[in-house]
Length: 184
Image 1 (cartoon, helix red, strand yellow):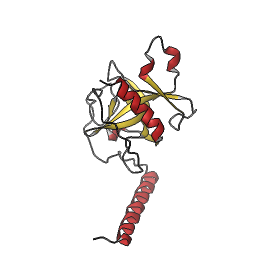
Image 2 (cartoon, one colour; image 1 turned 45 degrees about the vertical axis):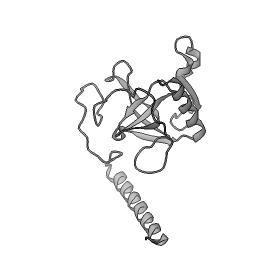
Image 3 (cartoon, one colour; image 1 turned 30 degrees about the horizontal axis):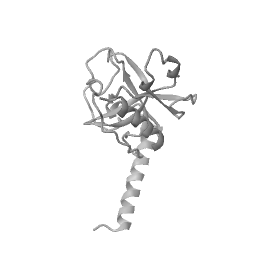
């Protein structure tokens, strides 16, 4: 059995290696993908340079988990910046903040965030599609943000371009309830 002192030394060793690796990357300009894995590029010439071809939006009721923690890989409960494929044409889309809500195999599942007042468009879009979550570091201007809960996109961990912050459990649960209400 490992002693507490040995466990503590092992943890400190891992932390020191992570700090050294990060400092080296910053000094040399080398950026490693979130998981460190190498994946074949998408062969769609219009898509951004992603790790793997987009398999389509997640359909059905996802298993929603809240498990954010500091580490190398993005986790459900965190807001990240990632490519959000267009709904009608997956080769079109844009970088946007995404709240990660779960996993589907190697893929992360997320809902897009938008700093737009969708209540004003209630006649065009059903109000149930959007859940207001407030402001956060994902928007530099700190505008009120809403999560689109009727569309769950898949994101490969290697394609996460940045991590904004961990969303608190109360707001995450509000989004999860919206997803459960709209998913089939």
